[in-house]
Length: 284
Ligand code: 13P
Ligand code: ZN
Image (cartoon, rainbow, N blue to C red):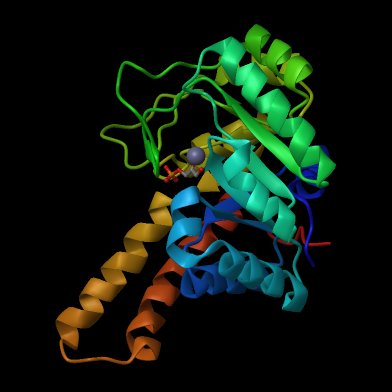
């Protein structure tokens, strides 16, 4: 079942769980995520970045996600993650994409408002929902890098103004998470999250969830996060399983053989993350 992110998140927001978003790169990673979601009877969001669209091909990824939604028993949304410009997204909207993120968080507040507002007008014309971001997460997500010291947590009052002026459907917040691996345990600002939740009514999104403890993610969900984004923690076991496989079988050439343990390793993490988000059994 293909659903919009908006539909999945309003259900999650009402019922106090989060829908996990997993970044996928190709058929192998996408199928592992979908298989895990089916096993757990969980809704799931499949996300692609601009880099993935370039690497695997926009139309191919679109077709894979839409096919997954068609043949699968669980609700699936397909989301374009961390795009900086609506112009880059329009080809996908024309293909039928219904969920996008416009990340102009590195811009000034006024520019962020202007860019996201324009994107909302265009995307809504295609029936797609828009995620905006206010505040900046340390780390690298594809084409966007924020250095330590350049990060900024989300201000609750500005979040209210941002949502009102842009008309965004969901809001990514910066409360102390980072993209990629953590050097030390992240220190999340739950009070800030509570204040943002009180100030705005759209579903809130937690980026950089790889490496955040289950306890902290659960707390974020209790304080109002409805979507949890995970990328790095899937890439690592996939790559490690491939490395291990080739160490043990240096002459193997068959992709069906060497991808099998990698798919399994990725799937294990997806199962854990679905439990963490409390979305198990929530596929309606
Ligand atoms: P991580 O790679 O840190 O899990 O971040 C994922 C993310 O925020 C994707 O948008
Ligand atoms: Zn992100």
